[in-house]
Length: 388
Image (cartoon, rainbow, N blue to C red; front, side):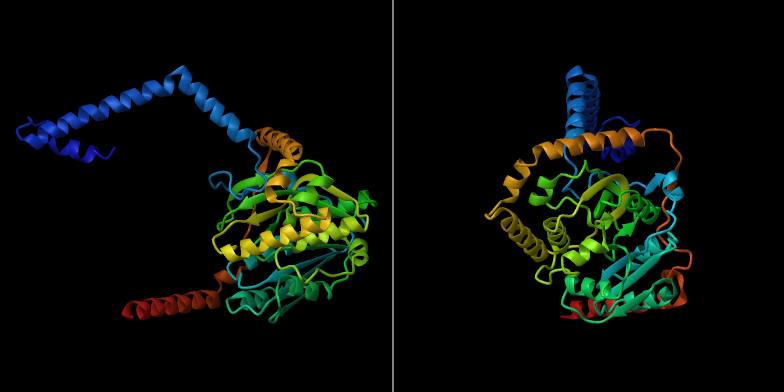
């Protein structure tokens, strides 16, 4: 309590001054309030209210929200590391579009190449970043099929340039601040091998903060076609598709879209008759951090989503209307989320996910020298601003 320090100063003395008398009275009030609070917490009505609060929190949809809980270590069941690669292993092509994500891209790269998938083709397409991105790519270039750093017109252009240099049977892209989770490539490869009719696969998402800590999850129900028509609930970092459906839609992302590139691609896949499947498995981690989106980018993203809904429905469909039409889908999501919470309570062996490689560039003398130089530049800028 804030009064503890004052209490210690006059405890044991007779209240000779007015201020002492006032302080003793304040102590009495404080003690009364603490006692009353303890009684209220034990009162049946308070217990019921807390139970209702917990029930409301448990039954509130989590999809669409980017933080659900206090940060905890990123841990997964040990079986994720034991996923078997099918024989023969289908080739997988993954492209990472990047721009000024030097702080995170090494962890993204490690999450892919660290799975040691035997038929992996991994490409990084950077938009000419001026931070440490290029130095990180050079440090890891032996593990990457190819990389390029050159100015481009946005994400769609970067993805198209990257995929133009690939040939894998299965395709995906992973943003330069997100992660693939352990065993994801083997799991997806086996699913496609066992389900030759499926064209598109996606899974569940873990939300992580800038320090790779778990701050929530999206546990989705079975694929629902109406949901795809109304809102983009497919976690992009968990999305994989076959090259045959990619070729059927023209083999390119639409450069007219800057933010809703994945939703546009999924809708075009569906127009070509693609078969979708959601798998009840955590495949990727989406990073929530301060540098993610500006207000202007969020507005542009909303405009693109409105364009796509208008294209599908032939009229304007607001986000509010879309949400009201997906009440049943969200209820199924809540049930799936509660099932996952029960599974998480089982006494299963779990492991913490390693997100930084042993040979990390950030641990090299070059990285430390750059950090010192950046700090010096920042100090000079701050000093110059204060002078003005």
